[in-house]
Picture 1 (tube, rainbow, N blue to C red):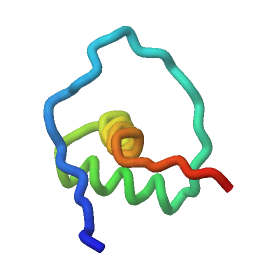
Picture 2: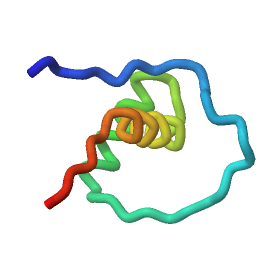
Picture 3: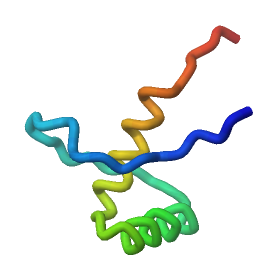
Picture 4: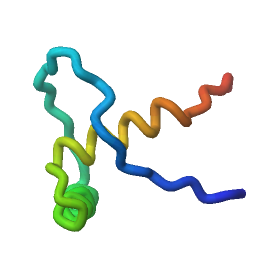
Length: 63
């Protein structure tokens, strides 16, 4: 299986944003913060890019 990579591109969504709350493991948040630091993006941008990538590439299957 070919490994897919998250390629960081300019912002796609331009609509009004809404604040939400989400729980995540501390070690995952640490990884997100490391990517943000390494790329010069904010934590929020990294999380949104990851969600956008997941939405475009997910496959929903029946049980």
